[in-house]
Image (cartoon, rainbow over all chains, first blue to last red; front, side, top):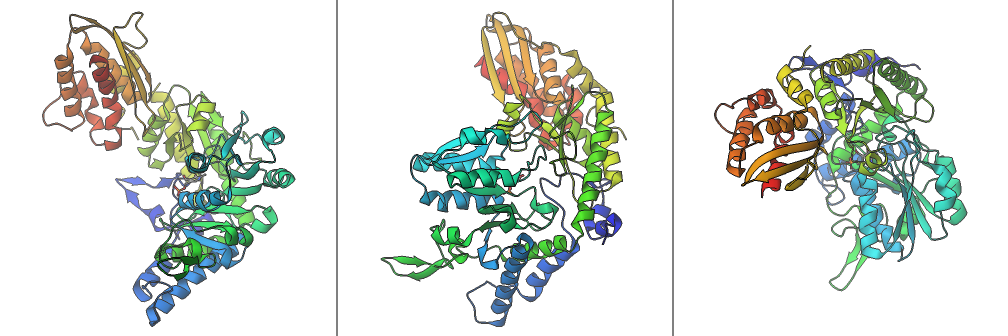
Length: 406
Length: 134
Ligand SMILES: Cc1ncc(COP(=O)(O)O)c(C=O)c1O
C-alpha cells in the first residue's frame, strides 16, 4: 500500500468547497478534524434506516440500533487493540477524563498523589484540581523542557509511593511532542501507579496497541479523529472498570433498582447512564475503520513530510520561533510557532484571509504559556488530507503577516 | 491577496504606540483581561480636577487592541468619564455595535465590524479605562 493524498482528499467534501471566495486550507485539525464520506454515510444510514434507542426495545429498529452501536464499540476496540467490553462511550475526551476523575477518584483517599505535567490541556488539569478539592488528593507537576517535551528526567524526584495515577498527554496539543510512554510506564510500575494517556492528539494519527503500550487508561475525542461531535472514548483495563463505581446514575447503568438500593450493571454499561450519543458513536466506529484502512507507515511519512515543509518554510521567515521539538524526532504533526512582533491572533486572522485555518492563542494550556511567558502561539495541525498547497498557502500568509504587521 | 482587516490606518495606529508605557505617578490604574483570547490591558491615568491629565497603557495583546489603546491615548487627555464615554460610542459605532458614523481616529476600526470575534479586542482598552476612572 502507499499514500495517495488526492484519493484521500476526495473523501472529504468540505476540502473542495470555496468559502467566501477562498479555498479551504484546513490546518486546524487539532481543534476539530474534518469528516470523510464514510462517516457521514454511516451516520445517515443509522438516522434514516435504523434510528431508535438502544438496549431498550424489542422492535426491529431498536435491535438494529443496538447492533450498530455495539458494532461501533467493537470497531473502536479493534482500532485500539483491545476488547469491546473495555470501551466506554462518553460525550467527549473531556467527559472521559472527568469520568475517570470521579469514578477512579472514588478509589483514592486523602494524601494519595496524582502526577500530571505542565503541558497538559486544561481538561487534564482541572478535573484533578476538582478532585483535589473534593477528596484531598495531592497534585504534582512534571516540568517541561525548553523544546516543549515533558521532562521525564524529573520522574524519580516526583514519583512517591503515594502516587496512584500518572495522567499525561500522549501527544501535546501545543508542541506536538510525543511522550516516551515506555519510560513513564516503567517508572509507574516501580511505585505501583496507574498510567492514563490523553490521546486526543494521537488517536487521529493511526491505530494503537494499548496493551503493548502498557497503560491503564486511554481517552480520546471523536471529533478530532474524523468522527462526529459529542462522542468520546474511555478505555480502561477491565479490572479497573470492574473496581470503579459509577460516575453518573440513570437508565442503562443499573443491575436492579429498588427505592432502597440499586446494584450496578457491569462495565461498560455501568458508565453509560442514560441514552448514549448513538449516531455519533456509530460515526466514530466508521471513522476508526476509515483510519484503520490507511497505510499508516506511508500516511505518517506524508504527514511528517508536511511538518518538515512547515519547519523549513518558517525557518526562512525572519523572527519565527518554534515551540516544540525542532526536528521530526519525537513529534507528531502539530507545530506551534511565534512570529516576533506579531500577535498570534493577528497571524491567524491574516492566514484566514488566505483561506488558511489555524488556531491561535493559549490552546487551553495556560500553564504551558506561563512556563514560556507567552501570550499564545499560532498552531498548525496536520491531517492525512493536507497537502503541499495547504502548507504553501500557510507560508505565504505568514510571510504576508511578517511584512505588513510589524 | 491582501487582508481587509489590517488596513494601513489600524497598523499605523498600533505602530505609533501613542501612550505606550507606564506613568511615574498615576492617580489610578486598572487592568482588564479578556479570558477568551488572553489579551491584557493595563491603563494608568493621572487626573486633575476629575479630568485626564496624562494617560499610559501597557497592552499584552493583538494589534487591534494595541491600535485601540493608542487611539484612546491620543484622544483621552482633557476628558472626564463622560467625555470618555463619548469616545466609546465612536468605537462602538466603528465596529457596528451602534448606529451612526464614527469619528476619527476610531473610524479606522470600521473594517473590524465584520469580524465579530475581534470586537472585544477594540473595546478592551475602554473597559480598563472605565475601571480606572470609577
Ligand atoms: C490534548 C487534548 N486533550 C483534551 C482535549 C479536549 O477534547 P474535547 O474538548 O473534545 O473534550 C483536547 C482538545 O482540544 C486536546 O487537544
